[in-house]
Length: 332
Figure 1 (cartoon, helix red, strand yellow):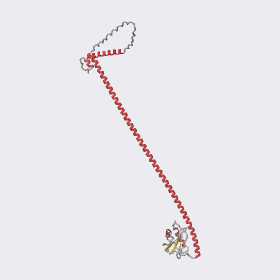
Figure 2 (spheres, one colour):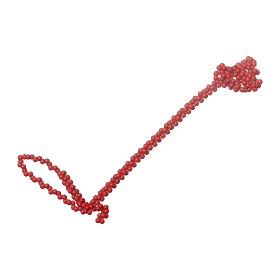
Figure 3 (cartoon, one colour):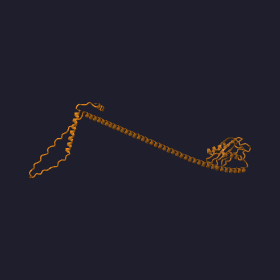
Figure 4 (cartoon, one colour):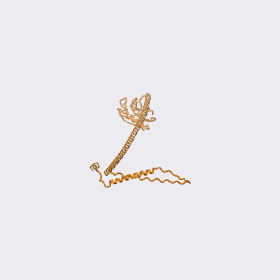
């Protein structure tokens, strides 16, 4: 008994009639097996062929009697089973069932753990896929932003280049306009210089002609010119008043002529200026005695006389007290 407790320490208490029940169950299983065996063997037997009877005038023969039935099979009852061995078998069966249940539970737990691991792996793969998609989207957005920034930079460079080209064209246009203006100014200055040279040459010729005529008149008259003065072509000339020497008019003309500034019409203009001087030649007064009808030319002539202060002195060392100066523009 101690041996059994050491082998099976967790045996349940023994119930009455367990051995009988086990023997009866075993007997019923054996009978059920024999019944199934004979039933299957009977169903698998080959069926007999069909028979046909023919009736003739032959007198009938006596039939043979059927064979006697087979004696019934007697089932031997199972040998008696020891109660202790039955308990051991039952405990072994329960142990195996418990082991099978434990194995099934372990298998189920393993399957559950495997399914959980697969779910976790699937979730991890999905998370990794989402992170990869987010990273790809971020990279794509970054590339788009970089492309947009590059495009803006290119546009800014193009605008700057266009502005630079426009400024360069504007500078070239301004330089061209300035060059044209300088050229026009140079041409105008050259024309003005040529005109001034031509006017100076004409004045010089007129002065020579006037001197020749004056010398001729002085030779014919044998005396100095009267105080009314003689109008000379060109820049004009002056004649001294009373007691003026014959060369005094040339002195006045040489002083007044450079101060005449006139760029308008010349035909028909003649102005007579009345001059009053001190003995040392200082100009006391100058006024227009006879107008030309052109106020601008009258003003230019009067300005030329005022700019000629002081007037030259005569041979006696004194300037005439008053005299008239008749002025005409060059070419008038």
